[in-house]
Image (cartoon, rainbow over all chains, first blue to last red; front, side, top):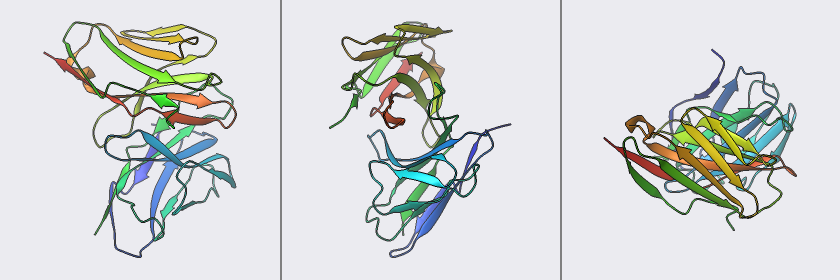
Length: 114
Length: 112
């Protein structure tokens, strides 16, 4: 079945440590997105990529980095510069920027601080 | 400033009755609107969408209404079922950036 796979489901970070969240899709989608969800809040956009080797900052990009070397993969690194990283992270993909097609989401990664 | 707002954090409805979830937006240029359903510790699941050139879209028990003059979107679920209990997010697409902007969600509880 086609879909989006996020791993790991749970992740713990020590102070000063960088951690990388994986996101892989086999939907042949061009666009991919990373969101952060905090309790009682909506989804806030961290980074997005409309095409391989290109990505743009979202609304809360500080302390995060991404890469898009392959169409299927869009890993997110939470760096030590992100002072409040505890949250639920969601990866999504969509067919293309001009298509009226919905985003499809993975099941998320919950990141906590040790 | 929040561009997409869901002003009701929660809603309780009796099984079999209609559930109406509301969403307001501020940017008249938004061109595509979506509703998602989310269970705890899972990713949102797409429910239904509507283009800005339409005012209604129906899919089974779910109907989305768009009132562009009021910048208002609503989701009707008829009849409501206990399995519909979840958090519902509305989202709008900005055609300038192709970013999707989400509301804060409404928790729906359908009582058996």
